[in-house]
Image 1 (tube, rainbow, N blue to C red):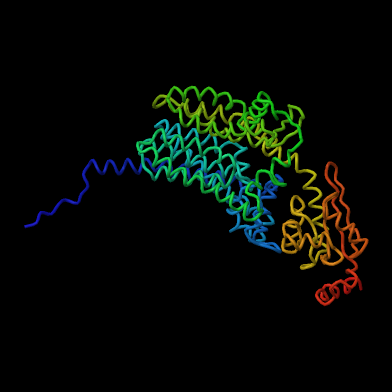
Image 2: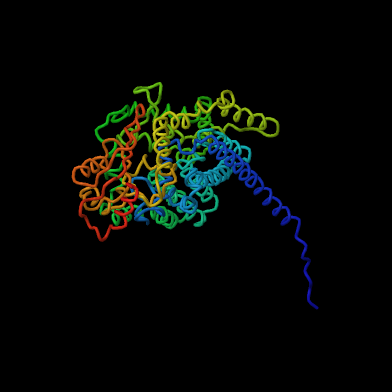
Length: 540
């Protein structure tokens, strides 16, 4: 007679299952709290109209939009210099006019990455110190920082990269415990995601590869799995630049690259290691707050005592990357209290916030009441500046975006108001892509109605031979740009454009809006007969 085994689980297996459930409960709690915090920040930012204060945020949003909405739509519109991941993440949302015009399409993907990053960061630090309380402190220090919350609420890349950084840290720490190739593959996938988001992640690849080589029992296999997966991102970007621009290094040395923009422009830290350290250190302090800056630095000593060598090195790498870039002349940082007394690229200091948060988490100690008090002390000190003075003026990333966008927001709104009142669908606009694109987003003009340099041959022919190929009813130009030159040439040989609006704002280039009133003389009448008739009706 067969023996029927008791299906009731043994006490040991039931205890293990309960322990597993308990280990996942804090993860779920952290994810939910991070999601609520993120949603609240997105709501506040959108409600206050801050979403597109950064010129880069406006550009990221419009680059994604032009992939779908352009005279020449397609992957070529991803451009170069900026890596494509954020633009790709925005594509499902930016196609909707309401989400594009409000900027909300650019806020949702970074906010989702913020939640993912905070969750992975919690899991990584919990494993590093074998303490849920330490993991919670690290996650809270990052998540409650108003500079991080602001950047996760707008279409920028910093918080998207943080998700990659936190996931990589988690999988590398997990690998040391499990020696699983799945962890090596997870780290490779996370870094690959990061390499298509920011160039900081390219800098990580050799260090993480060396980590797998030194810590794996099967060194070559683990390092190979990680290295191959992580390198896919840079290889794809090099291939894209070669295919679209015939220059594998277009992103690095092309006309739109940081190197080309900064060429010949001196700034503090360029070629000076001491100043590079000083300026970046002040940016880190401004982003993290002075209390956390010093508390986290002291906590790193505690983390060293706890032998968290790899996490310390890994989280310090993004800061080292920026110091190298400041010294090489590609990434200037300006702060109000340091010459030349401006404010620019301060958000780079946010790259070391996870490093300082790790240091803060290392200061959690003891059990019971002592642990509770240490958690309160570390968190209280870390977020004290934001609680003591909660005004957005104290958030350096917000202040930079607000201060540097006053003139741009003024002229873009004035120009958008004019076009909204006078532009008719399908008229067409001869213009340039960049800051000026905000005018069309605010006015509700589809980008497919605009003819810009990103439309290739059609734009080049219209610019060089406006008498033959320029048929747009409107031109919106920025003082001194190629479009203004083309309009001036066109007025000599046709078509004739009349100046309808000139917008002059202090500390900003002049913006001019022109309208065509005569068609090119005897130029391709059979092809453009409809356009001529439409223009004639308007003149009547």
